[in-house]
Amino acid sequence: MRPGKGKGFEMMKLAPSILAADFTVLGEQISRLEKAGVEYLHIDVMDGMFVPSISFGMPVIASIRKNSKLVFDVHLMVEEPIRYVEAFKEAGADLITIHAEACKHLHRTVMRIKELGLKAGVSLNPATPANVLEYVLGELDMVLVMTVNPGFGGQSFIEATLPKIVALKEMIQKTGKEIDIQVDGGISVDNVGRVMSAGANVIVAGTCIFRGDIEENVAGFKRKFEEFKEGRHGEGK
Ligand code: DX5
Ligand code: ZN
Image 1: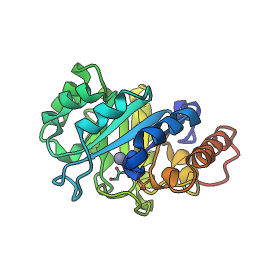
Image 2 (image 1 turned 30 degrees about the vertical axis):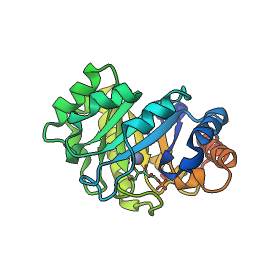
Image 3 (image 1 turned 90 degrees about the horizontal axis):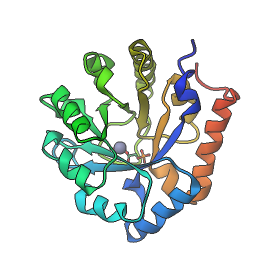
Image 4 (image 1 turned 60 degrees about the horizontal axis):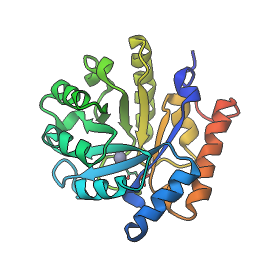
């Protein structure tokens, strides 16, 4: 079976990353995304330890939660995130993704997120192999394959992550469960076809959503999703 087929085929989701937003008009830009029909809002939290940069945290999320019904997809680039998962739930997270590399006790951290009634995702840096998830995969709602080294927006897509998406899709199919594959970093309308063909169905994009016209950019990604669904996509395997 072609790796892109199956559940991911019908369930493409767009997850704009607010890291690239204009924070002077953040609420307004989120409303525009919501009206344009995006499914998730991707919220990048950076601690200056796990990744070199520091972004924003709970107060910002609590503030935007008041005016948005979007699924808040919180990507924690934070050392030992188990310390904060409850606080991010309180702030308004619906889905929390942690990094395998940042957790001493990955399984425990995943279970803590689920006990709080949230969806749980685990992210892998570009150099981390898919098989680190072998014994925890069945507990997850989503796997995030980083397609850049985390820490900054606007970086270039790393091609070597494509076979990892394919490998994860196969691992997920063996579990018989519905587990999303998200990609994050350097995604544009020019390469989204290839990540979808490899098996990704939740697409994060920062720069390529917020640079220029938000509505047009969302529509551009949605068109690519439609083309993919209809099998009109020429790229990839
Ligand atoms: C990187 C972040 C990404 C990033 C994506 O550390 O996790 O979500 O903001 O931004 P672009 O699409 O600009 O690569
Ligand atoms: Zn992210």
